[in-house]
Image 1 (cartoon, rainbow, N blue to C red):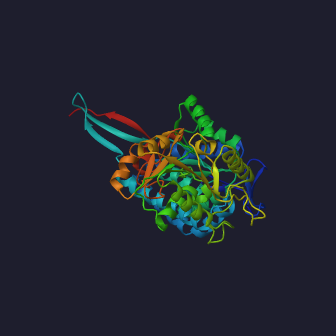
Image 2: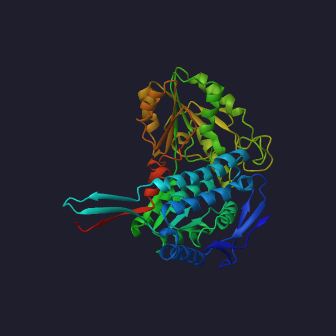
Image 3: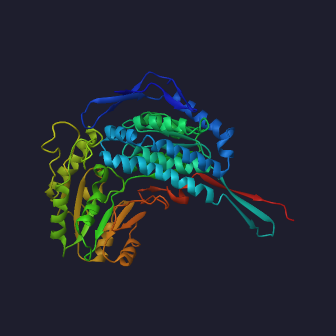
Length: 483
């Protein structure tokens, strides 16, 4: 039982304003494994005030980019020293398989921080140019101010790093609000912040429910909101920020397509990569390639291969190092995915493997047996809506043009992939896909040095790469005297 009784505000542990608590429930055992204070609006006000003080009067925004980069490096190192402990806590909170938590959550987070430590020093913070009338002009990238990071439960530490890296590089203090399902790992982040000796108020962490989270978004002391989560909630956050003219980044849902071209060599390694692209982290990834598009020439062959590969995945305790698929984060999520399985079968899709919900060998836990649906049409519910579970839908196409059309026939546009032996042609196909990131022959859905974000209802703005810093800065023009 990991019971926490304080909040991390202004660089120290403080008592919460209220007496409410958030219970953390294991998705494997269905038992309470921890609790944290449920922050109130008063706590949010205190956290924003601490971040505001750090921005308005503190040293962080006034440091050189190189000095801020050193602070980012220290934070990365402090997290690396806690990697195994953090990974186990994340797996216990949300059901991520242990190996995925270690690599896809903790070490990926530290790699993001290390990347931004490198980007910060070379970022074009200032540009001197000659004005139209001949006077010298200085164009600066000034920090946007205090930022709020709203964090989802599926990859909590990694997504915190997506906010921390660029905001810290830009000189923007943050208030982070972890999801109520996964607040425990954020306490180890706070320990790392203390070890990294960052100035007070640069990073503040307040776990709270969604209503209190809205108070953070609406807070007049917040200049920028970075939200990762569902499209429905993101739309509401966007409405609030639009009404207040707050700067905003939204990384939302997806229904990504993997286009398998006829020349694709689906050997064991490649097939495993294709499966991983769709069911990584138990399918609870916004960029999951959950629609697999295959030509009718190879349809039966690929469906059979996918069914065998997915059916062989080991489902079980997320803390078992051999587990490949763990439980979903909550009972409501399990029920939701079962609803999609029922909808797929009722609309005529054929379950090649799985499709029945809870695996037969599991007695407790919010598990879903990995599923492959064949005979899927792109107008079916399982092909239109984000499932967020280990469910693949294999959709046939007649020719390449139709494959691209099907891939683009979606309200979303976050990620995608093309599978082919001709990388140059694969890139040409990728360029026709209306989506933010496309990988060729890979399950990678992002690169830390390149912008990540979506088209259409998958979001607004970009994270990662130098472009990630852009969202935490404002252009300022200083017209200098001539001569």
